[in-house]
Image 1 (tube, rainbow, N blue to C red):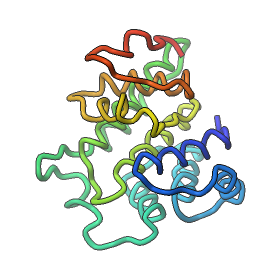
Image 2 (cartoon, rainbow, N blue to C red; image 1 turned 120 degrees about the vertical axis):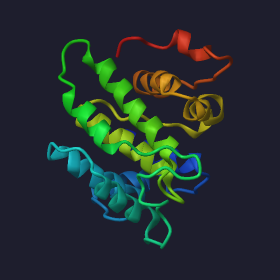
Image 3 (spheres, rainbow, N blue to C red; image 1 turned 90 degrees about the horizontal axis):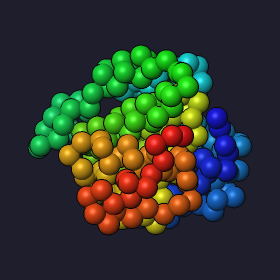
Length: 209
């Protein structure tokens, strides 16, 4: 499920979350049509090509996407080897994520399970923070690559509600809030979310997709 306009919007918003000035939505969409091989668009298209071939991204795919995103691969851009915990960070469970994703078999009620798994993977990536720069954008690209693998709509992580819901979900001790956030972003992409309490917006989020 590949909606060009929604992907362009996702890239715009993902840059905005990090305070990056991005191209116009029209220009981003044009670069997607032209299959640009650099920058944020190139990183997305690389991960998309992996899942279109029926595979899941490996660590090497994420490294290459990161190189395209940052535009140059600097010494020290990866914290340790990208998998080992350091300075309180958790390890990035790539093998575990791949195993769980591969085990999903779609039935009538499995869409929610797939989204929850993607949310857990996104949350784990942010906990690991394997890069010295670009963790947020790569983790969101990774999440949407997994959603594309499941033939689900891409999630647009919007800058407007990042302080009200996205950042709290990122900082939460487990993936519980991120699961709710991601479900909402897929079901109602233009609906702003605000975390007013521990439960907050979770109580009104869709249980079905």
